[in-house]
Amino acid sequence: MVAADLSPLLARAFHTDTATRATAALAEIREQRGGRAARVRAYEVVVPEGADRAWFEASLLRPLVYFCESGRAPLPACPGVFVALFAGDTLHCIDASEVVSFGCALLGVDSEELVRRFGTGEVRHALRRDD
Image 1: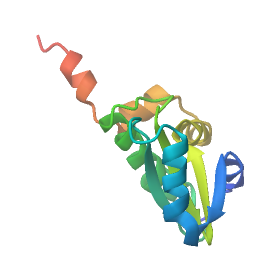
Image 2 (image 1 turned 90 degrees about the vertical axis):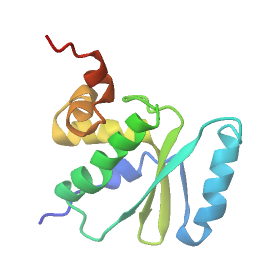
Image 3 (image 1 turned 135 degrees about the vertical axis):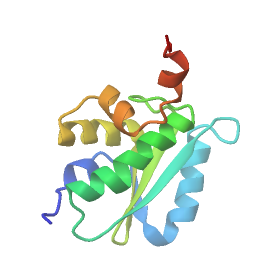
C-alpha cells in the first residue's frame, strides 16, 4: 500500500480549522453558505494515516458520488455539498466539486464515468427503454 499524496486536494480547502472546533466550524459554514433555507450539506470523512488510492476511491469518492446523486446534487457541480475531511487534528472543508475534480484526475476518468460507476443509477434506469 503506497500512500496517496492528498496535499493537492487539501490545498483546495476553502476553510480549515482544528478538529476540536469541527461542530462549531461546520455550523458556521452552513450558516454562511445559505442558512437554514438553503440545502447545504457536509459529507464528513476521516482520512486514515497512509491513505492510498484504493482508500480514496472506495471510502471517499464512491460514497461521495452516491451521496451527491441521491441528494439531488448532481456531478460535477455537486451544488450545496462540501466535504469535511478530518486529517489528523485538522478539519479541511473542500467543495465536493473539487473532490470530484481531484478524483477524476487521479483515476483518469470524467465525472460521467464516476456517476456510471458509483452513482445511484436511478436516472439512467428511469430513462432506459426496455424493448
